[in-house]
Image 1 (cartoon, one colour):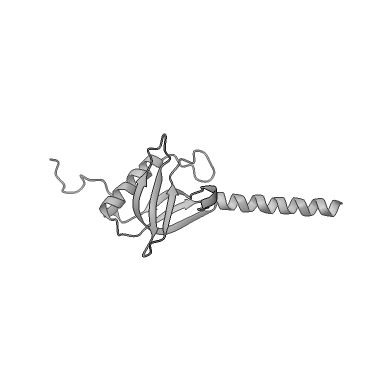
Image 2 (cartoon, rainbow, N blue to C red; image 1 turned 90 degrees about the horizontal axis):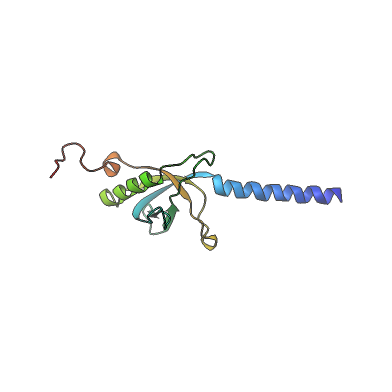
Length: 134
């Protein structure tokens, strides 16, 4: 009986650790940003992308993680604005999106984007360097 309890406990621990790795596991994806949805209040922010040089889609949620270790993410609106500039300025340029989680369609789960690495000319705000205000 004790052997069976230990085996069940080990299986439960492995399942919990696997779930936490799927939820928390950091990753990065090389994608092209094609669009954004959501207003951050009634509709969750989403960043729509395709894998670089393919037509396979990947949608990221863009939600604040709050004090969730190790991310401490509080800038989803800023990241959404950066993604919008990138999709407008450089829609064909691959960028690297960093985040955590996995896309599991039947559970309606999306990876959460935490940052975007893009060329400076793609992510800079209008009005910089030599642009005149009208």
